[in-house]
Image: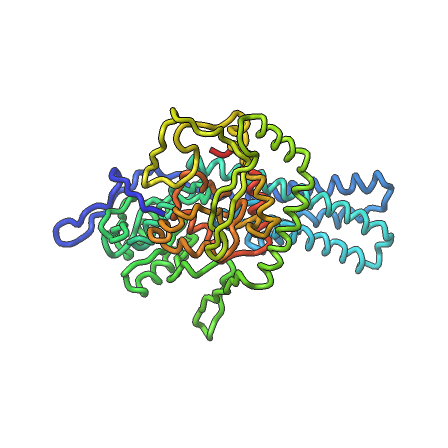
Length: 496
């Protein structure tokens, strides 16, 4: 991502004597994260789990099933909350979405229900096989209501985060390109709930690629001043980026932050190789980061491609009436073919014809020429707007992409993967953008990790490459299903 500089908020220069000046932090700019947020999350889970017990037991009573003792039912909702707390589900985390939490939520509910069933089986004073059926009904209600409650809570938090409420003031330790990237990501993604309020480091922070640009947030002082800075800013979180400061000084700063109850994250060295499947192991007391390898030619990817073709064929069959209707509307909209095939680059750099519904009329001599800016990505409507009425609707809703299901059935594309690009742009981007060619390790997709995060149309190609490589290196079947689910929301928000 391109580093940005806010000239209105720069680091203070060094004053006489070589001592860095400390920038003041305006208190009214700090939107302090509320300490009661975890308790409110737990209260929502307790309420929805209790409601699930009431509905489940009402359902069981309507079928004339024998209910478990009331005193046992009273333990279900607190057990759900306790298990969720043990799994760290109420601790602050970085943009834990509903789909990220769903497996953990369902596991917690299942374990709580199993504990209740175990109590019924092991208690000799309780008889009646139908009691298990009653618990099963309660379990099914909880499996729906508790996730819905968490979905509501996450939506509320994200709404407040986007309006700079309930955010946690955050200190950045370090300087240079990586620190600039951290600040930039936090600023453009308020859903993380972290507001960078200042940089603290033993050197004046210079944040450009070549360390020749000033910081975009205030410089608050040296690491030895951390305790004072925390008091002054009310900081609740700290992110340690790259720094030339001695490791001992940074370790001491982390200890101070922990003593003040702050959440601390550390950007690892060679961070490009550390994915979501990485884990910490130890040799004695020495921690090692284990970095699993993703092999695009493994049997897992072969199974992915086989399932892609199957589900694409089933999808085409299910939507065939709608698909045929769109074909008819395209045919009637203007002269020309129904499908538009454009050369694109797929896996291993092989070219294929990417299919779309034709959304534009044939060009005319009077149409204006299109001039593309060098800073914009290809995409959108080029030149004179030649979109047909049905073409405008299809582009706005991404329905023009539906024929790519045929590409999937042919084996040229996957349902999920990096979006394919035109050959002429691929050659250019391979030269200009780091790791752009790594995207072609896997088949191109109808939708992708970058697209569901808003990187579509005329957006940064470098950002797309970064997100696409993240997808490849952290691939799993669950990630594919997650992206497909997120695609529905992205389509409903309408494409540009």
